Amino acid sequence: DPHELQPTTMDLFGKCQKERMDNLDQANQELDKLRKHADKLQSELQEALQEAEVSKRRRDWAFSERDKIVLERESIRSLCDRLRRERDRAVSDLAEALRDSDDIKKQRNETTKELNVLKEKMEAQLEKESRMLQLHATSHNYSHDSAIDNDLQEWDTEVVEIDLVGLASDEDLGLDLIGGRDDPQYPNDSGIYVSCVAKGSILEGKLRPNDCIIRVNNLDCTNVSKRVVLETMRSSGGAAIIVVRRRKVGARSLYTTQLQLSNYEHGLTLETGIYISKISPGSLAAKEGNLAVGDRVLSINNKTM
Image (tube, rainbow, N blue to C red; front, side):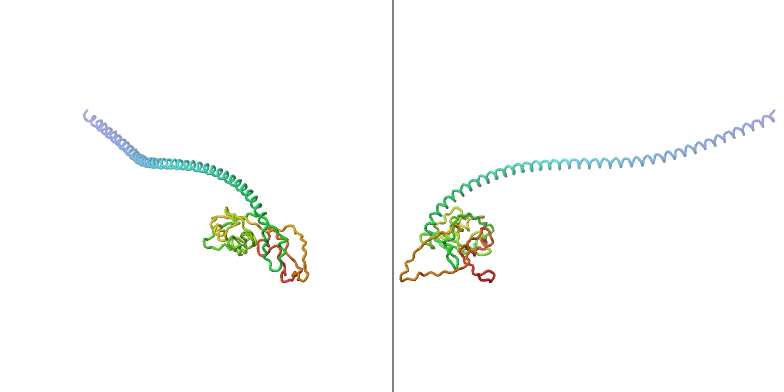
């Protein structure tokens, strides 16, 4: 019946339309889900790209740091090689310096031995010469009040080293000499004697008045002029080795003398007093140089003796 089929068709159409709408809704929901998922994936992709870019920059930085470290390592290696070479050179120089030092010590010891031998020979020669000179030498007296030191003193030989470093060519030595070949002070004696040593000079405390200069370095001064002695001292360079005869306290000699007076005066004037009998070597009085054995002491601190 046509009237009965029409509702059925309509129902089917409505049902189909409903199913279609449901399917469309589901499809739209799926599309929304897919769109959200795509957006999420796109966001994750962007984050991944950003992380990749950061990782790339970090990788480039790491490579750059690695290159710097390699360069620093090469620089340190080069520095170590240079320091090693310098160390080896320093060790070699030190070994050479030690060898030179040993050679210098050996030379110094040999020179010392030679000087000792030369000193012994010189002392023996000087002793022989001094014995000959003592036969006709007369003691030189610097006291203004007494002449008794001829009986109190005898000659001794000493070696004096004078440091002349820093002495200007025109600077005065502060030394006055008497005697010599051109102006002998005693008969048959051309020896050179020290008459005065200036205070504050480089010779103060080294030489003393009345010292007889026997030798200056290699120069025999027993028969030369004062000028030659002074020039030799000045030309000595750093140091001068001076050998002198110096009076020292010895045994007193006793003499018995007979004077035939008759109608003549004996001419002697006797007096009592205090005289210097000994000056200790190296003492303040010895360094002063103005006092000598045989000098008469008149007063001490304004107190009459």
